Image (tube, rainbow, N blue to C red; front, side, top):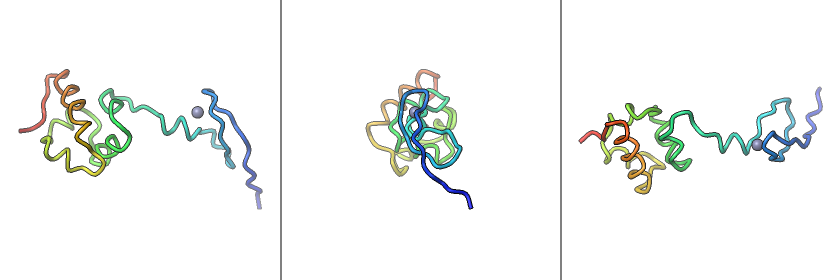
Length: 97
Ligand SMILES: [Zn+2]
């Protein structure tokens, strides 16, 4: 049996956290982790997850949907729509009509 005593660690950003395993992943950093693609990083975490749950990770994926459909995703709110619309427009894309 291995003892899983939790030890206090500090990540490179200075977050303090307790971990029992050898995994050095900081939970705070993990939560703050920004996705690669820009538009997802504009969103709140629930809205981002709503898109990711649908496999939407790029603006091209997003453009397949209409605004109405996007709003029906669990976690997606009205407040996210203008951000998404602007991100699409930047790429010359738009929501499906
Ligand atoms: Zn951290």
